[in-house]
Each structure stands twice: as C-alpha cells, then as structure tokens.
Length: 419
Image (cartoon, rainbow, N blue to C red):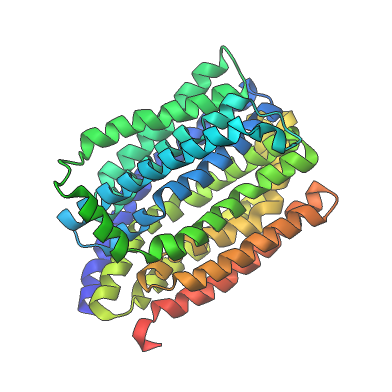
C-alpha cells in the first residue's frame, strides 16, 4: 500500500500533464470545425467521414495491435526493439495490402460494390498510404505513453491536430470537397511524424533485425491473435454508424452525424485519453508488483464517472442550441443527434480508459467475445429500423448497456489473484 500512496501524487501529476496537451489537441479540431463546417457541405463531410472511418479501421490492421504491448514491456532497449518490430510489421502488411489492392483493381473491384455515396477512386487508392501514416503515428504515441514521456506525447498530438486543421481550412478556401479534407488529413499526419522523428528518434536499427522481429512476434503473439480481432471489430463498430447511415440515408445525414461524433467526442475523450495514457502505465506497474491493480482502478473510476455524468446532463439541455449558434442553423440536427448519443458517450468515457485492464491481465479472449457481441448489435440496430432517428437512439442505448457489462468485467480483472 505504501507504494500506492507514493505513486498517487505522481499519477495525477502525470494525468494533468497529459491532460493539458490532450486538451489543446482536442480543442484545435473543435475550434477548426467552426470554420470547416461553413466551408464544406454536410454531404462532402459525410463522404470524408466514411473514407476516414475506413482508413482508421485499416490502420488497426497494419500494426496487428502490437503497439498495445509496449506498456507491459520493460523500459529501455527491449521497448525500443518492440517499437522497431511493430513499425516493421506495419510497413510489411501495408506492402502486402497494396499488392492485393492492385490485384483488386485489375479484376474490376470498383464495380463489385454499389453504395449510396459517390467516393472518388483516388480516395480509395489513398486508403493504404494514409492508414500507414496513421498507424505509424499511433506507434510513436504509444511509445511515448509507455515510456512516460508525456510532454513529447502532448507535443505530438498538438502538432498533428493543428496540422490537419490548418491544411483542411487552407484547402477549403480553394476547393471545399471531400477530397481536400482527405488529402489534408494525410498531410497533417505526415507533418506530425516529422516532429515525432525529431523529438523521439528511433535510433539505429539492430543488426539482427529479422531475429528480433521474429522473437517479438513469438513473445507477443496474443496481441495479433486476440487483441487485433477484438480491436478491429471495435474499430469497425465505431466507424460503422457513419458508413451505414451514408448508404441507407445519404451523405447529408452521414455528414451531420459525423460532425456530432467529432464535436461530442472531443470533450468526452479529453480527460479519458489523458487518463488512459497514465493509467495503463501505473496499472501495469502495480499489477507486476502486487498481482492486482484494484486501487488504481477505483481511483480512476471515481474521477471518470462524475465528470461524465455532469457533462452529459449539461449537453442534454444545450446541445441543439450550441450547434445552431456555432455551426449554423443547417447543423441544428447535429445537436439533436448529440442528445441521442449521450448514453453511449457517457459510458464510453468511463469504460474505455479502464478497458486496458484486459491487456494487463491477458484476458484478450474475453474482450474478443465482447467485441463480437458489440459488432453484431451495431449491425442489427443500424439496419433493422426504418428511420435514422430510431436506429441511432437504439444503437446508443444498447451500446451503453454493453459498456456497463464491460465495466463489471474489467473491475473483476483488476482484482487479479485476490478475486
């Protein structure tokens, strides 16, 4: 218990450090969206959001979720080798998928699907390059978080957020299309990677690279075997609403939903992401030392729960008004959708940071089962009902209920051997 008391002050000091950088990184796109929403039509925003959703899902595949293992690997050279191995994996998988995409195009792939949205072909072709950039960015941020380099982590996030918004606003002055949003997003991530390489250089590659990568794969096989399917399913479930709404009800409604998720997700994810970056290091350290991390879990939950409740209560009454005032009357529907989505975001804010417990205790197989259930529910709720309003409301309430189940599971995992 003495170790816990000694680490308590350091825990929240680190959270505060990450929170400051995360706050700026989250506020930049929210403030930028005030301009972007007046430059781009909802339909263009909907096409871009669908494309970005596909890119995010693909980025999860490229790393095999090996970057989530960084926090449980020893500091120093072992972790640096893990970063190199994960980077090597992402590049290798990207090359393989590029070959498959070329083959797909040769066989007439674009004619195989018929969607209710018109996505330019070159946006489809840009998926793999941009996804690779996103995956590399996630590798560097996970490395900084695992090493406890929270100032560098904050700088990376701020740089990426600012670069993306700056490119998108600049492009919107000349060509306000979904293509401009997508290309600007890729350029912004690339700019942040230049900064990442400068402030956190990877160093020299080891001589026996293939052996190191092979040993790393063998040691961390549970992450691509169990965490990858689970996180891939989760990424699909998170991105699926925009794609389904776009195909069923059009790009206009999808764009309206996309703005809601972007704006509502920013403050909800603000503290949550900062807590996660610190929680996973402290919880992993506590679990290695004591065989449980209940104290870290409870301490974190007591902060996340009331903050989530207060935010949701406030947004319930003022969201429609805020969207209409700040984004324009034609975006008022985004405020209405925000009210529908509050149960989901309230529970996600609490459950997501604490969910890292499954990696610490090696319960990825249970997480996988939960993610499969989540995906099935998402597909059914968004496709069964005939109106987008009812579909989104049922989706939000059911998602929140599933998060409650996840919270109960993760708490039991935090008890470790003592349960």
